[in-house]
Amino acid sequence: MNIRIGNGYDIHRLVPGRKLILGGICIEYELGLLGHSDADVVLHALSDAIFGALALPNIGVYFPNTDPQNKDLDSGEILSFAKNKLWEQNFAISNLDITIIAETPKLSPFLDKMKASIAEILSISTSQIGIKATTNEGLGDIGKKKAIAALVSVLLVAI
Image (cartoon, rainbow, N blue to C red):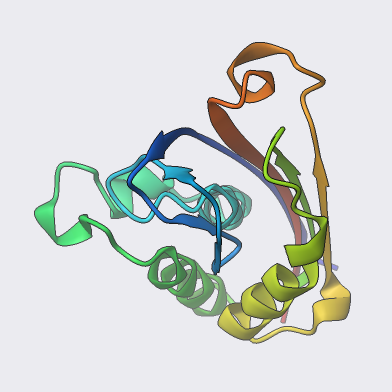
């Protein structure tokens, strides 16, 4: 059995004047994540986890922040690109494990919507996605409510 494991990580600063997009959904909040694209740390970390499992370059190679075409890009497009790379190499997702690290806002009410959004983009079942939110216990920029991060592990199986 040919299996692959990938890990992804992303972090972005919270700033006023931006929408907060996490896991492909918009969350009503007074701050949003700063980035060249929509700065969805969940979908960025997930895309990088897939790229890593496939032994491909990271997200910045495919979607550089110096390219004006990527300005405010919907990160769902990045994840769709990663899904196509997955299929090109004849792999499928066995499961995902996603951790979002944020002091605020409280994310538990949104986790099922994120799971549904990710499942739709990747054409998989929500039962293949584990997603949870935690805090940084007041430590670092995340703990000071200046940033949000995401960690993702993915298990791929050959098809």
